[in-house]
Amino acid sequence: MFDPMYMLMMVPALLLAGIASLMVKLTFSKYSKVRAYSGMTGAQAAERMMRSNGIYDVTIEQTHGFLSDHYDPSKKVLRLSPDVYQSNSLAAIGVACHEAGHALQHATQYAPLMLRSTLVPVTQFSSMFAFYVFFGGLLFRIQPLLYVGCALFAAAFVFAVVTLPVEWDASARAKQHMVMSGIVSPGQERDAGRVLNAAFLTYLAAAVSSLMTLLYYLMRAGIIGGGRNRD
Image 1 (cartoon, rainbow, N blue to C red):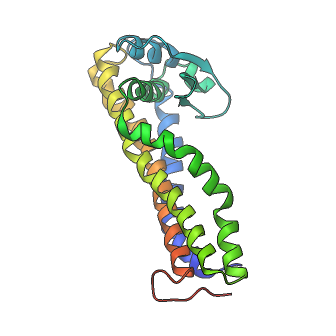
Image 2: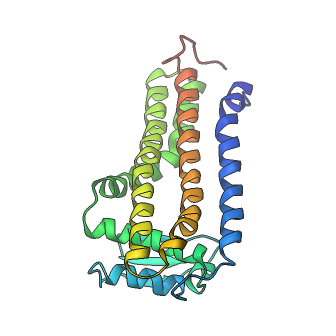
């Protein structure tokens, strides 16, 4: 089922993903060597940011993996990777406060975050079965199955798009409260923010990749482009 058209359409997304990944690694590496004004570790910074905003029911745990940091709204747990949890660098502070920003979103019922949480099970299902449903429709020439497969790919795209304002807003909250809470000095805010800006590019790349994937399968199904699905 190799299709050169698919590879051609995915080139922009692959290039953007590669650039984003490189920028994240380079930026994190650069600012992991710069100590934050307060001397706080990432875990302490996240805790201060949440406490200063009246959030006391979120626990902070250390997890495994490089930049595996995330906030789990279902369990109200903020998990930080070792390089973020234990470090007092600007890079660690930026990432930790970004995740604390998600906790603030959850506490204020930020609509895009609530929508994304609702879409999680749908997206998990679509990521597992979209290709198989579409391939079944292509193999057995069952047009409705092609449409269902495209709908599943569309669900993944919607999730990627909804993720963009969620991540951007979490970074904006982090940039604001890092200074307000005395975690970084006003002069360090921009440098800490650069780590977050680089990380946002990875979500943008994921959205572009999801869009190009959806467009490809819509084309294969004959829904756009006036073409018919090919063997």
